[in-house]
Each structure stands twice: as C-alpha cells, then as structure tokens.
Length: 298
Image 1 (tube, rainbow, N blue to C red):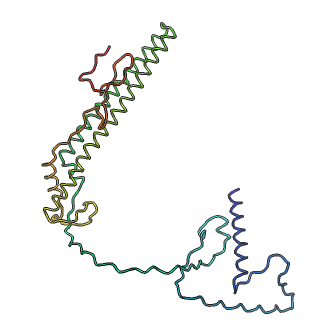
Image 2 (cartoon, rainbow, N blue to C red):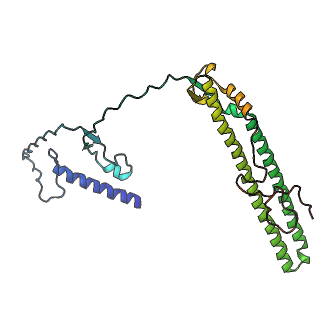
Image 3 (cartoon, rainbow, N blue to C red):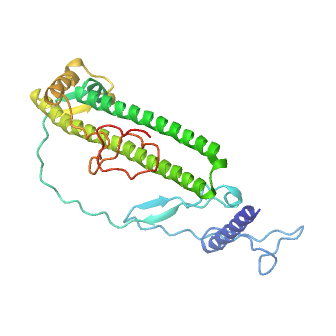
C-alpha cells in the first residue's frame, strides 16, 4: 500500500507539471481546472466562440544539429507510468565538434600468418603438467587419509572419556575435555595449513609451466614465420597446416619434462607443518619442520 500511494503521488505531480508547461508552449490548449477564471462552456443553443489561432512557432536556427533525448522514466511501471502522458523528446544542442588534426601515416602491419593451437591438449600431453597433477593428487589422498584417522582417534578418545567419567573427579573431567579440545584445534589448524600448502605447490608448478609454454609457443611460431597465434576454440574453421599443437608439445617436453615443487607440508614462502596427524595425548604445538617418521602412539 505505501508503494502504490507513493506511485500515485508521483503520477499526480507529473501530470500537474506537464499541464503547467503546456500553458507556456504555443499551440497547446489545456482547459483550466475548477471553475475560476476559465472560459465558460457554451449554453445549449449558443455557438461557442471561435478559438484564437495559435501563433506559429518561429523556426529554429540550424547552425548546430539537435539531438533528441528521450525523457527519463518513459518505461517505468506502476501508476506513475500509466498516468504519465507521452512527453516529446528533449531537444539538446551540442557544442561544436572538435577539429581533428591530421596525423602522419603509420607503418603498415605485415600480412598475417596465422597459427592455431589447443591449450587443453598441450596440458594433457605435457609431462611436466602430468607430474604436477600426479604429485598433488598423491598429497591430497594422503591428507584425506590423515584426516579420517584423526577423526577416528577423536571418537575413540571421546568414548573413553564418557566411559571413565563416573570414576573421575570434576577437575579430571575438565582436564581431559580441554586436552581433547586442544588436540582437535591443533589438528584442524594443521590440516588447513597442509591443504593451503598443497594449493600453493600446484600454483607454483603451473606458473612454471605457463612461463615456459609462452616462450615455446613464440619459438615454434617464429620458426614457421607465424606472427598471429589463436586458440583453437576461438576458430570456427582452419586447415591442419595452421595447427602447431603437436610441435609445441614436442618442444615443451624437451625443455621441461619436470618442474620443481615445494616439499610436502612446506609453504612456497614459509615454514612447514607436520604432515602426519598429532599423536594421542596432550596437544603439542606444530613443529617448524616435518619429522622423518611419525612418532610412536601411546
């Protein structure tokens, strides 16, 4: 209801404004509202007085072109759009157009010698990309296994705490609960760090491949006299002689068979976290280096 009321008020205001403007424009006639000061309607049997002829509008100067601008709100819906009459387009007189000075003739580009390639095919056939995918998949699988083992250890500790609650004092219960909570907190932080470091390692590997791939594409294109290389997905039709995917893959595998990735649990720009789950017992702070073998479980 407030929205409809607001729209009705807007429509009424627009109509009043349009009527006031019409009284000021030559050739327009709007009957006055109400009964004060206006021309009376003719009685039956009387002839209406002739309407005065409207003065002809003066011709506009044609020195500068006029641009028609549609009034705003012409397509607005609701009551305001339904009641608002169609207004004439606004005549806007633009300033003089700037003079465009002549510019010297530039060098003509060479004739295009086009090549195409498929980046997805290159990444699938690249041995370096295969290495990155294999290494990251192995680290992801190991992280998943460690998370599952740690969650199982949490459940065992919680069940043991429930079974021993009757034989422990309130202070002992609180100490065991805090111990378990600290372990969960530290393990979750360790797992988050490992997942972030794994993503950083993948980005480091792909950045190396991308950097080398750009140079290889330029090298192969120049060796064939090509000065324009397009993605195959952007081309609707081409002949096989334009495609340089296979030569790029061959050269790519020659110059980059593998890439250097940060060790597991090591950030690309910082210290490491422990790759294995924390042992049973009180939670310990995350070490700065990954241990060579997991600690014995108590």
